Structure formats: C-alpha cells, structure tokens
Amino acid sequence: MLMKGLLADAGHYRAKNVGIFDKEEVKHIAPKSSRVPELMNALFAWIKKEKELHPLALSAVVHYEIEFIHPFEDGNGRMGRFWQGLILKEYNALFKYVPVESLIERNQKKYYAALETSDNEGDATVFIEFSLKMIKASLTEMSADIIGITHTLEDRLTEAGRHFKNKAFSRKDYMQFHKNISSATASRDLKEGVRRSQLKKIGQKNQTRYKYVG
Image (tube, rainbow, N blue to C red):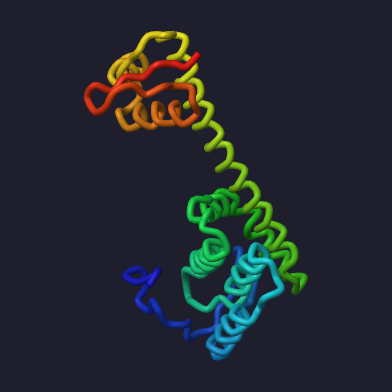
C-alpha cells in the first residue's frame, strides 16, 4: 500500500536478485529473490513469538532485517522505517508524536554507515545502537518542544499578572495584551491559569472575567 501508484509492481516481492552499489563498490548483496517470501514469513513469525527483546530494540532489529532481506525492488528503506515506527507505536502511543523517522532521514549518512557495518559484521548490534540513539534524540527533541511551550504559557501568564495586577479582565483584554496569540491559545492559557489557582474565574459566558489570586 505504501508504494501503490509509485511502482509498477507495488505490493509484490521482487522477482529478481538485487544488490546495493556505491559507484562500482558492492555495499550489500541481498538474498536471492526466491528466498524472499520464506525469509519475510520467518521474520513476521519471529516478531509474533518474540517476548524477551525490548520493543525499542525489537523495532530496530525488524528495520535492519527488512533492509537486509531487501524484499522489494524499491522502497525498502521506507518500509523498514514504517515497521519500526509501527512497533514503537504499539509499544507506546507517545511514539505517534515522536519524529524518529524524520530524524533518521536527517542522519542518512550515519544510517547507511550503521547498516553497512552491521551487514559486514553479520550482527545488527551497531544498527540497534544507532536506532536507540535516534529514538533518544527524538524524545529529547520532543521534550524540548514541550518545555518551550510550557515556558511560553508561564511567561504569558506572568507578564499578564504584572500588567493586570488586581484588576479583573476578560479574554479579549488578555488577547489585546498578548497581541500575537489566537483566541484558542488565550482560552487555554486562562483555563490553565485557573487550574493552577493563579487565576480566579468570575461570571459566565460573555460576562466571564478573570482576576489574579493574591
């Protein structure tokens, strides 16, 4: 499905033997095409049975094995990243929002180097280590974004507190003070301020006003 409309034989395993070359240098010779169905069936059977390997490592192993088998004529990298992402999301829904795939794409040289080293050594350890570093970096990147958002909200509430002091104000007043925020952001800020007991909500609907506590 991922390659539908992009390749003439999308949805089918490759029917010919393939290799990966850099100019005239052989980087990888994939298993014979006749073995692809057998190897892919074995891989997915192993995924279903494997209970001891941590999902973070499992996702990297599956990614590596798909690259090693090279089941399709094209799009194997995309397929490997897809399955890694799927396993991560099954492990924890947080990974729906973690940009692991985009970070791997931004580090393509290291990605291909890790694949090549693991291929040469006949051991996926180097690629697993690379993947875990990318996952950690992605989580760190997302955490930084969240912290940035939180600090921005706190800054807005603090600055508005200095401005309004003990005076009651409306959402419109808050937006006039913070001119670059949307009405949805203003509503979230004020709701969060009430939840944190920084603000007291007075009145209902169009008559709603807010006042800083203390």
